[in-house]
Amino acid sequence: MAYWLMKSEPDEVSIDDVLAAPARTVAWFGVRNYQARNFLRDTMRAGDLALFYHSSCAEPGIAGIVEVCSPAYPDTTQFDPASPYHDPKATPEQPRWTSVDVRAVRKTALLSLKELRTIPALAGMRLLAKGSRLSIMPVEPDEWRTIEAMLGQP
Image 1 (cartoon, helix red, strand yellow):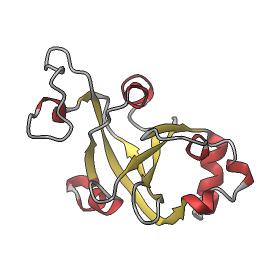
Image 2 (tube, helix red, strand yellow):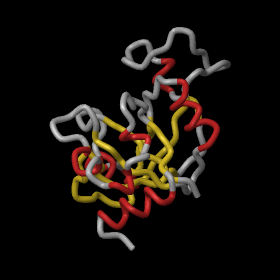
Image 3 (cartoon, helix red, strand yellow):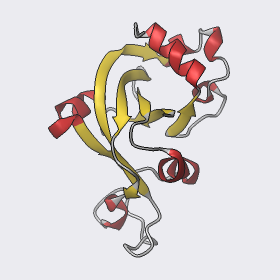
């Protein structure tokens, strides 16, 4: 099992939206960065766990935990001309962008970016690196355990 951090703007999809979705599952769509896409397509597997991170909001931070529950598949928004994620270069025969489905494991108390920055054990976390903007990034097992402890998990 691998661990991830997946960013979403809460006005697009929040942890509450995932919890309210049928089977507590949503498609993770709209990734338009090649490195993040490659993580989805090439490395992420069903059963992996991810920190659900609210970004581009008043108080960014970890808001929940989700489980990847599907293999990667073409992101359908790339083919929809009405979608803000439309890619005119993508075709069903040669898709460029990938989605996975995620299922809510649980909502957590918000663990803010500001609070994460104060934890010495997380100093090397990709999220906290200067200029880090990826919407999907791996989380090291020791970082995951530190965050679980902060969230009151075993």
